[in-house]
Each structure stands twice: as structure tokens, then as C-alpha cells.
Length: 100
Image (cartoon, rainbow, N blue to C red; front, side):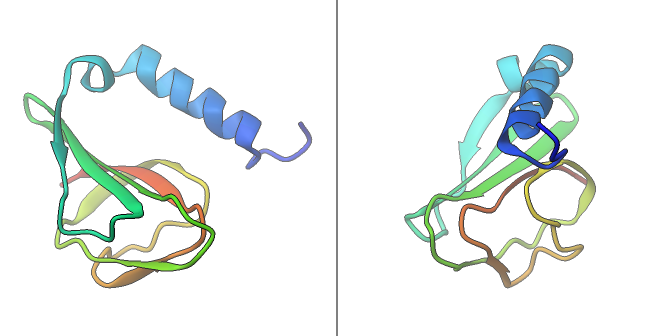
């Protein structure tokens, strides 16, 4: 509870995103298939909103490449690089960003 970056507070942020953003509930789901099988990466799209969700589901570093530029980090458990091209995701790293 003392760590503002703990799993507890990350889940609170995710719940808040769901309650305040219709894109989470009604947005279209578009899987990004060009990733390692142990990385979950997808877009949520609703109207002119587009979010990118990425999660490394392993205890190993994994490469990830995305040509998209993002505007804002909504949730992260590690610092999200400013450029998503050819990054190395840390074990269990996850983030949600809005796409420019």
C-alpha cells in the first residue's frame, strides 16, 4: 500500500479507466498479430479514439516493434519509451497509450 506503483494501485488505475472511458467497454478490438506469441498487443478503437495496449506475459525480456506514435501514457508499470520502434519489453511490462 505504501508503493504508489504497486499492483494494487495499477488495478485501481485500470478500473478508473474502465469507468471513465467508453472505449474500454464499446471500442472495437483489433489484435496485433505480428508480435511474439507471448506478447499481448491490441488496439481499442472507438470513433476518433485509438488506444494501444501491450503486455509482456513472460518473465523474460521480449522485443516489440510498433510504428505508431503515441500521445499519452494512460497506464504503465515501467516507464514507456517515447519511441515504440524496436523496444525491449521488460518481464511482465505492460502499458496503455493513446495513439496520435
